[in-house]
Amino acid sequence: MATRGSGPVITAQNLRKTFGSVQAVKDVSFDVEPGQVLGLLGPNGAGKTTTINMITTLLQIDGGEATVGGFDVRTQPEVVRQLIGLAGQSAAVDEKLTARENLELFGRLYKIPRNERRRRIEKLIERFDLGAFADRPASSYSGGERRRLDVVAALVAEPPAVFLDEPTTGLDPRSRSELWNTVRSLASNGVAIVLSTQYLEEADRLADEILVIDRGEIVAQGTPDALKHDLERDVLEVHVVDRTDVDTARELLGLDANVTTDVEARRIDIPVPGGADRSLDLLRQLQDGGVSISNFQLRQPTLDDVFLALTGSSVTETEEVTT
Ligand SMILES: Nc1ncnc2c1ncn2[C@@H]1O[C@H](COP(=O)(O)OP(=O)(O)O)[C@@H](O)[C@H]1O
Ligand SMILES: [Mg+2]
Image 1 (cartoon, rainbow, N blue to C red):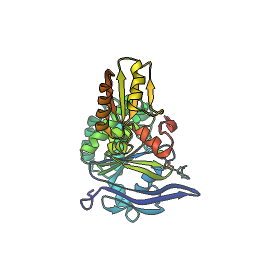
Image 2 (image 1 turned 45 degrees about the horizontal axis):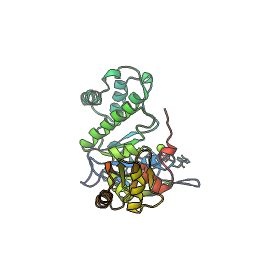
Image 3 (image 1 turned 180 degrees about the vertical axis):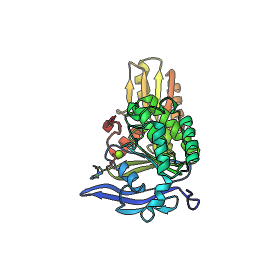
Image 4 (image 1 turned 90 degrees about the vertical axis):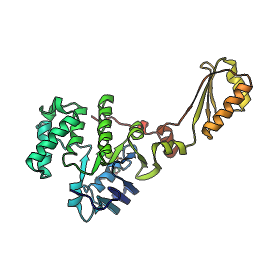
């Protein structure tokens, strides 16, 4: 099914949802272009699933608007459903059926003609490497195999918009990186993707744009690099040759008491708001003061630093492993 117009594939504008007294989603807006991955990053209960469910027509929208392929989610839900693939936390896979049979079922659901269906399914099995378990019942799959089938099932209809709700939660590192490759490959084929996650590293690696969401509200928005840059907290890590130089450096640079130094490790961590220029200055001052530097690096803050600064709590603290 074709989309209408050439703009963003997915739009959300001022989305709101209330459950009783809980404002699950307060004012969420974003656009996703073809080939773009939008990361919805937030802890448990942030409103990620509610946001996705509203756009995918599973949940009624209380306020605001959403479109997929140019079609209004509220007024044309049946058209929208033809344009989306959804891999959710509650897997839509039938345990008794094999991967091939599950995909066949999805293909029939979308009324894809038989020959075309067969062709697509074989292509998906090959491309996403499901061959090893494609003819075993899904009840025998590992967590990673099941998630991959769940994601691939969302692709049978070749939708231009794909929603992945925490696709790697609870997966081991290897399955996680396989799923990351799947997502990258989809995006490179022009699919617009909304991916929710509690994992900072996942958002950092996959998303072109990240929405940090907390208690139903967007608390920050931008590319992974921009989010880290905004924090203006690059850290210059300096290693010195002599232990005594740790204190010398502290005096030379007039460092605050809160700058961490480790005399044993002969290491000084200096927050540098000015990034590279400021770092060069500091290194020169140390050199001029006779401090021998064995090594140094300017490192970016992690997304965990960003989340901590924005919400006062760490995403990883609330990370929960589900199976
Ligand atoms: N059907 C529901 N009824 C009542 N409260 C709900 C329902 N679904 C979600 N919530 C609440 O809305 C908030 C957001 O939930 P959710 O969107 O599932 O967050 P996330 O997917 O980010 O973990 C939570 O406080 C959750 O308890
Ligand atoms: Mg959720």
